[in-house]
Length: 93
Image (cartoon, rainbow, N blue to C red):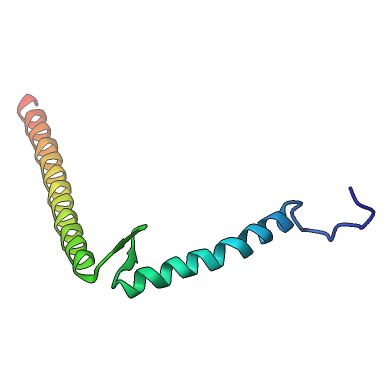
């Protein structure tokens, strides 16, 4: 280690992180600007046009509805099964 004391609460790799960030941020912002000029926007980690984003959102809504109906069916089936068991218990008494 060098003779300089390290400031408290600073990670030893912070200088390396800052160096990497200083070199990557301009590259990433340039790439972002180029893709935005092409009419693309970031969405879920990928670059898509607004039409593709709208299509993905519709698809997500459809999937959400399917999951909701599936959960509702499972809950109703569980209630029906518990009711059936309750009827069997009453008949057995």
